[in-house]
Length: 319
Image (cartoon, rainbow, N blue to C red; front, side, top):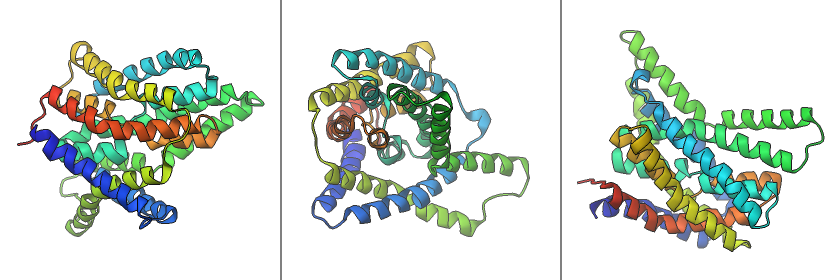
């Protein structure tokens, strides 16, 4: 119960503040874009760089990637025939499948895990985040392009290559690897380290990252709202919030025997609501936009309950 008070209430209380700000028009769509840019291009990179710079590569366990993405790919491909049964074509069905497996690991996941476990919990989370967009969004883009019957093989490869480059340009991923590289360099060269003044600047930005990310998430929900296709969106939400974390926990616990903290972080990240990138992919290809919108909204709302239950079932204590 203490975990709910210490983690759920602060996290989703801040999301609610963001939603109220968005609904009251204190933060316009243009202002929200500005806040999003500041958060993603300054605050989160500082937090991620600073966290990963303290990690040694030999301390990383890559089993968590097999657990999370093995589970994710299994559910993704299992969701495609289900979408077909619901009458969706490949493009919209891909958006449905992506909604089931793509977590909001940055905007909500990073604040949530940092409040719960501090920097120790961010390490496994950032390993997942560093690969999530590259694996899942590239796969989704490929299938949607196939569904839309790209004019030629070259044009398909060109579009997918452009999508990969765009993902790699996202400030989150370079920040993770830059921090890891800098940490290894400082470990190899005696006396080398982040200057104190620069580290204080990074620390100030890092402290601001979680609340700004949560306010951004809440304000985004206020500006989006619910659309059509709520029935399949409800099904995708149930699969995202209940089935995915259960399968991640089972595989991490019984197949890979993950470290308890890493297993907990992987499970909680799997239980996060659908990420905004699902909506962005749908908008980019103009397919399943209403479905993606509803899954993001519904899963964010219901995740208050499911994440609370997950914390209790995992026995997470913060006091």
